[in-house]
Image (tube, rainbow, N blue to C red):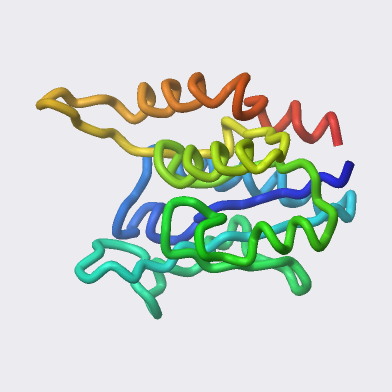
Length: 182
């Protein structure tokens, strides 16, 4: 079984000073960087996903801006795959699935941003496509949401989505646990 690291949307707009700063992005970015280094040391496949907004008036990830660039904590090295997407699901209208099949990748370790949107959507899609997934809970970040006039703290959003994914869609582990198992 070939395991690959899938880093999703760890981009400048999600960090302090960005157009859509997430709660815990700095810590999550650093943890994703640790995971990236472990995969590089083991010479395992690494795939970066970069979201570029094509929606008119989108508030972040605008093309040709500093905010859309991959964050320095996980900047791609030469030879690492980089795919651009325009939707939350990293498989939708991208060559990701073909790449995984062509390279005989059968298991995904996933980290990235926003947990409640692109991480959730991609993990569920990967599981539906038959890929066992491991999600690095401490290498993900999200933001507070509101529904029906009720504010939901980012910490609660994060925990709810991780809990929903754990088990059926992914094994949710810490970066330390994942690295120990490589």
